[in-house]
Image (cartoon, rainbow, N blue to C red; front, side, top):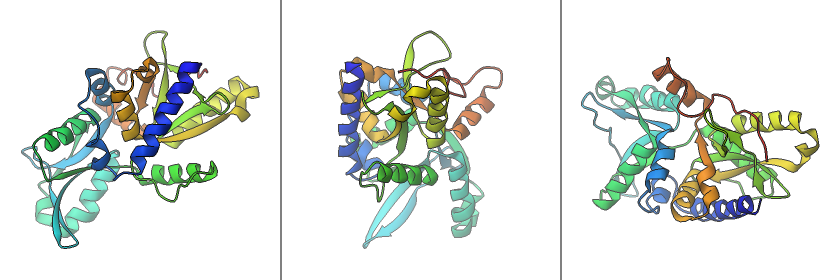
Length: 266
């Protein structure tokens, strides 16, 4: 239990520090070179961007107070990437838009691209865009808990936890008996896990809540902390992303995790 309490402290500190920094790429650039175990965790989360037929990223240039900024957009949601193509690029540059497509990568790929760009002093900003509905949910939860949640700069993750012990619910993965701590990209997934737990252990319902943390804070904790409980963290893709993964591997289950969270425990 003490190990889980330490984990809560580590994530709380990392999240509060990074959420005060610049959103998106600003946070990620502060993270050290990833270890193999970190990359493996990120590899299982899809992100989406726009490319041409050659696989080259679409660079959007914009003016910011008289300074030209080059930006490549990555999205947590495939639907958001498609909407950006359909609702914005097709209006601003219809000829270019016809040559573009939504391309999936992994969060690990995005991570490596940003770090490589930093190494080369690349002036291009690689921005990871959250799902707006989940940002709104994060702000609402922060306000409910008494924290300042007027805005959330980053990618929110939702973690079912216990209030008194500052410990987390755990789930088994598809294989093996070892249990892990799920960090969800959607509030609805965290709520579903808590509801399942409350039905199984009604007396503990009032002792549970959903904590909001920043993805980049979690990534920093994965890289900088020696606490073995950090390795228990599993990034759980959104329902949309799970469906996308399953569509790619119809004859096999989604990578190393179930489509719905089972058997939560302390």
